[in-house]
Length: 223
Image: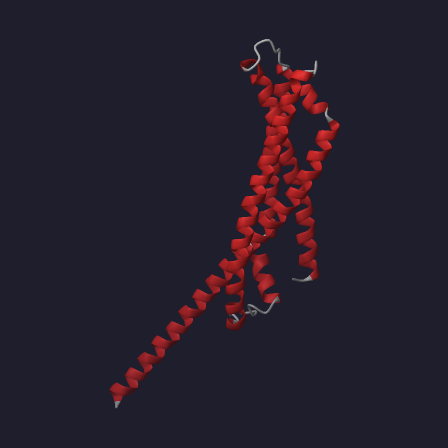
């Protein structure tokens, strides 16, 4: 990978990390907003702050959706086909006429399949850990609300220490998620391009082989 591609990859992962962190944190607060509206089902004497809960739900929903769309657009920018093809040419996997280097192709297929499998497994684990941490944090905050005179949603939003801890953990998880997602998508598009070039090369080989057979048969008939 060239220095320019490395720099682009790093910048995209930094931005992607911030976007995914925003999504995770928004989901975190969304839990609180939704629960604020339904606490009366558990504690009939509780008077919820519905105005604040509705604002939190709307704001977090819009934030999560906007950040997700932005992240997807960012990922599409980084894994666009022409960029991947240029990287393959820079690595001499493809020449300027799009012909495939079969020696590098064999090495690439073997290593890429293993990498994709590992990336997929790690991504599932990280998503599960993110969801589990967010849910456990919510349960912890929910268990505290009876001990305070504050409304649950106000306590949840004003607990600075809890927010800072979750933000730090989400930053780490988001970085790993962003790295794995971008790497897996790049590897997938890379393999897709290589596979298509391989099929085209095989089609040319078969076409030339059929042509040679036809010429040999013509010569044999003339004799």
